[in-house]
Amino acid sequence: MESSSAAKKNLREQLRRDRELGFMPQSWLHIIQSREIQNASVVASYLSYGFEPQTLDINQALLRAGKLLLIPRTLEDRDIEWVAWDGSERSLKMRGKVLEPTAEKYKGEGAIDVVIVPSLHIDRRGNRLGQGGGSYDRALARTRAWKVGLVGATELSGTHLPVEEHDQRVDAAATPSLLLRFTQSAAAHL
Image (tube, rainbow, N blue to C red):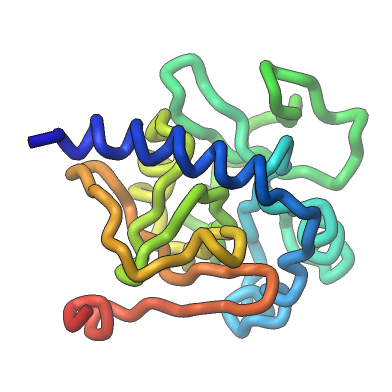
C-alpha cells in the first residue's frame, strides 16, 4: 500500500501537469468581499508565480482597503516568516522562482486575521495539497487566522486527499467564481 507521502508526491506531479495544461489567467478578487477579509486588519497573502492562482489584484485591493498586507519569505529550514509589504517592487528580490520581500520580519504573527494560501487542490474536508515543502503547514499551525486556499475551478473536489499528521486544513476554498466555507461539523459528515 502506498504511503500518504508517496501518494501526495504522485498526485502533486499530476496536478501540476493538469494545472499547466488548463491554465487561464483569472481573478479571485471576489474573496475581498468575504466578511472575514472585510473585518480583517492584517492579511497574509502571497506573490503568485507561474501557473498559480493570481494574487496581484487581490494584493492591490487589500492595500487600497488599508489592510496591513503580509507576504511570505522562506527561511533556510523551509519555514515561512511574514513580512509587511507596501506593494513596492523595489522591496522585493528574486529567490529561485519567486519574489520575496527584503524588509524586516513582521513580529505580530498572532495578529494575523486572514491567510490566503496557495493550493494545488482542496478536498471537501478542507484538506489542501500544496507544493510539498511543508512551509505553509508550519506557518498555518502557528496561527488562528481564517485560512482560505485559492484553487482553479477543477481543483476543488469531493475526492479525499491523502493526509499526513502535519497537514493543516483551510477554513475555505476559493475558485474564480465561488467561495466555499468548511465547518468542522459539516466536514465530519462528509
